[in-house]
Amino acid sequence: MKTDNEATYPDSLLLAMLPSAQQVVPLLIQLFQPKSVVDVGCGLGVWLSVFQKEGVSSVLGIDNPAYIDLNHLVIHPKDFLAHDLQQPLVIDRSYDLVMCLEVAEHLPVSQANTFVQSLTGLGEVVVFSAAIPHQGGIHHVNEQWASYWVSVFAKAHFTPVNCLKHRLWANDQVEHWYKQNLLVFVKNERLQRNAHLQHLKQSSLDTLQDVVHPQIWEQMIANKNAEISLLKEHITYLKQENTGIKNAFNNLMKGVKRKLPFVKHKK
Image (tube, rainbow, N blue to C red; front, side, top):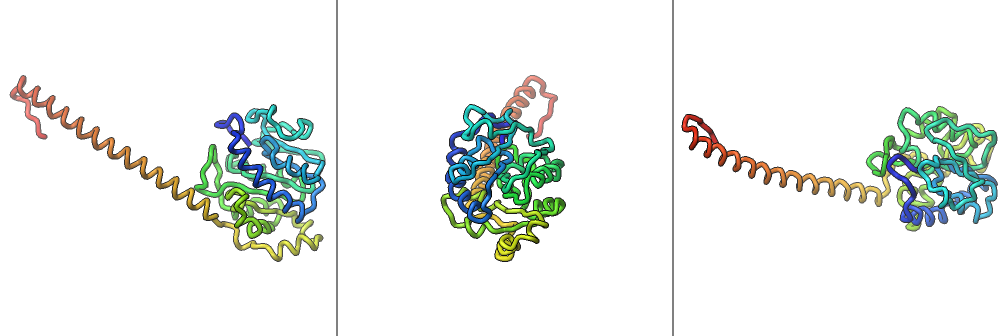
């Protein structure tokens, strides 16, 4: 998904998405065997293109075309739906798998419940990820811990099935924000009647929701250290400027005193 500060997807971001998608998509197909997939906040459709290559023919990508160069779509235009993600989304069909990756943090907190309702209205299994606090990024206005999103999905009667983290955590070909943030949410009724999903739930790491991947942690520390270094540079500069201003003021007052001996000035 693109926001006000981003006009097009840079090649670097595409290169980051593709290897991750090539690793995660086969795993999702193995676990959930979807015949149809919708990606909300799909960007140029990189993840959906990998689903297609893996044999999923029915796909739909949804995003705001104001922030996407449609000439660079990697899926067919007929498989793309233009929609402002800050508005409720209703489609008259259901998908086997709903994808929404690193999108929700770009939307105001006031829209979180409505956005999740839109996602859960598209299908009974949602693969979701969103940036955690201090993860950093462009136009991140609602960075939240996973437990926050668990509570929002619970209002829509969806349960987390944390079956991806331990399968991806050490995979160097998957970007660290996906390894850290990916969660699966399943509609409660579907979970109760599906033995396979119940098994995934029982063997998942549901207690490990609010976690930080070491690579994210190191990047956060590096960012903070850079901010501290920049702050120190500003302080040094201001001290130097302050000394210069003070000296200039003292020289000015000396000149004034010479002209006007009755003027008193304390250094």
